[in-house]
Length: 200
Image 1: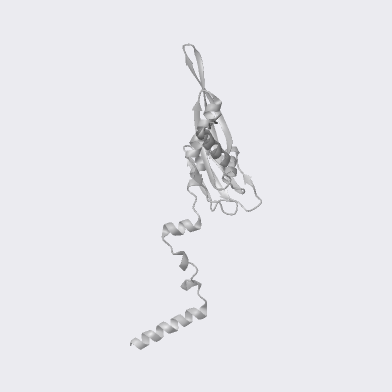
Image 2 (image 1 turned 120 degrees about the horizontal axis):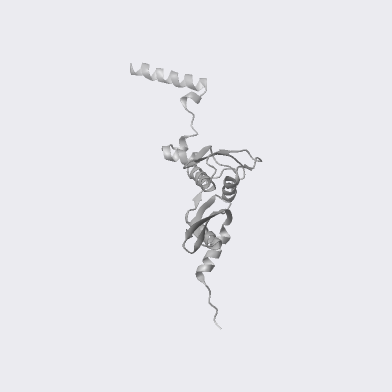
């Protein structure tokens, strides 16, 4: 007897095993019809590999399990890469979404993730172990999640900033005239005066 396999399910299982998921919120809505009220559910799910990749998705359906599966599918399509340096973010940033703002600050080793439920869940699944945050404005969980992702997407490492500015990293180690020692500056000045006298 030949065995048949569902390749789509196998592929989804392998993708799910790569990422860790966390259900943040399930919201229920109701609409009144002639025959009674009908309910629908919206699920907010975070996926991450704890190694710099994290995604967020919102799924809506008439049943909670279907809404969660839809949210996970959307999260897999919206993966972003967060620059993590020594377990924290490279610099301070403020993420904004509608009336919600989230301040994200790097923290030293051993601090831990000091944040609310939503920022902590996203940071931990992104692989961040030390972080300070503050929620400002609306505390709606969906808006806060969007604000955190807005902040993470705008993070840049020092190397990325140099590349954007067109700075040659190979010359960054050379000393500028202000950083030269007094002896070196005087030698440079005497050489310039000698060249000027020779030209006269």
